[in-house]
Image (cartoon, rainbow, N blue to C red):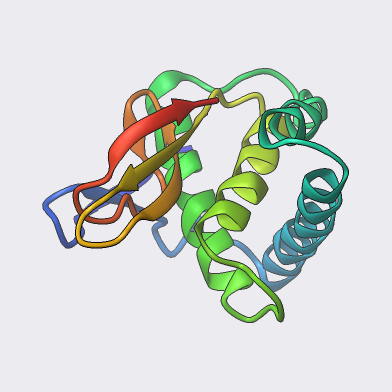
Amino acid sequence: MAFRQAEASGGRPQARRSSQERLRTSQRAQLAGEIVVSLLFARRALRRGTLDAAVVKLRGVGGRFGSAPERGESLLEARRLGAAVMRTLALMPGDTRCLTQSLVLTRLLARRRISATLVVGARIAPDFVAHAWVEHAGEPLLPTGDAFGRLVEL
């Protein structure tokens, strides 16, 4: 799948589909439905166990969409999915902050056989604050926040 590149804030390229490649309304609805179902799975997995167990469970759904895409194509697809997760979860009730977004995106990527790392970071000054995001090939797919030190990679 060919993509055009557009410079996003922060100087990183962002995936943009040309007018011929844009998802049809039915495809967007299907993706939104997949995101909502993934949200329910993520919330359930977190309630039933630890974070690392939840990540393992959410990744256990791999292979639903055929073979793994090429590296360049997978990064663009992963970025597109990250943006879709943020847009869709912004409309959902309940806690849909960084950890929830990261778990949902982790599940979507696993279903498409796209490797990803869930990163949890923290900042201790002036107050302790934790943050989570997802990376593919070392590139963040969700906002990384300001000055968070990496604590755990799952």
